[in-house]
Image (cartoon, rainbow, N blue to C red; front, top):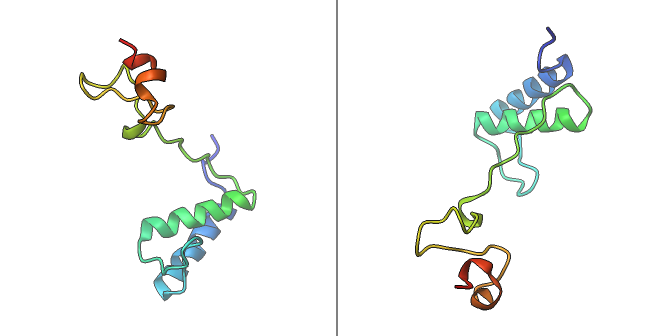
Length: 97
């Protein structure tokens, strides 16, 4: 049985962890210094994924709490995520009654 991660992925993660320890690892979007070991590993795996290394796909996130389905919401908290609050009574099938 083959491993989940390839050698190239391990090298990328190792390099990013060293960068974090040296204090030179920066996050891509904000450019802030990365101090979390978990975040450094995530950056390494993301870079490995982009370069074509053998890395499992990221787990897709579940529906967030704010975008729940109207039938799942408790009474009095029904929401229709597809429609804005102004138009909700007219267009949301959950509030039609």
